[in-house]
Image 1 (cartoon, rainbow, N blue to C red):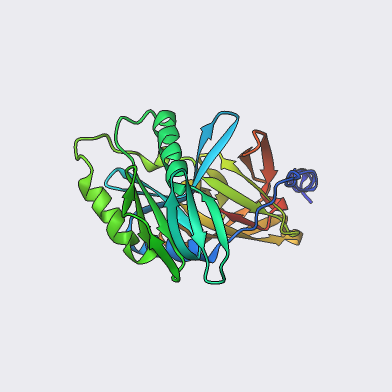
Image 2: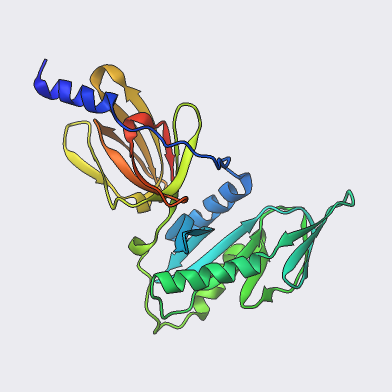
Length: 276
């Protein structure tokens, strides 16, 4: 066997796994998945789990739609029952009589937009929309509060298009390649790490041995099949436009800027799934 084989074996055996996480979040809200599919059907650029640095941590929103250079921030709520507003918080009243006071998504969306404009040094306006995705949600709310639109899921696409049409055509365009987004990395044990993949490209190669690279901005998720005897990982990649492809990895890793402030390298050979 060649020397390169043993070097590759050593790197894969000593590659770094996922760091331990104290704060573990379950992935996959059905409401968000349905919204994501709908957005992808109607708009060219949909970025999921958008984050901006804030203080010692990050602020995060569910989606950012960029159409004709116009950014639209979306916060998805899967609240049930009747939703009303009471100043700095929202009220939820369910059919069973349960009442809850909830943090205002208008305030958090405005905060995110402010931080986003500061971080990207944007001189243009950024639209914000809160979408209530539950079909049985009854909105006792105005259509807009403090410049943030409040809409049920059935009116979401129309609200986004309206925001894009209202945008000043002379304002600067936001380049999607500048946008940070949060990824979730899963191992076989289903634990994962949340953070920003800061690599602009993930190196890999095609089945015929040609070098290739993946831009995380345009990847939806990667499923990894470890081919142990060949010392390589088969990566089935699904892109944000719905297309897919198969690539291979020997010992690549990704740089993850974790939401707790840590920066680490995580080996692809130690992962099972990467969700963007």
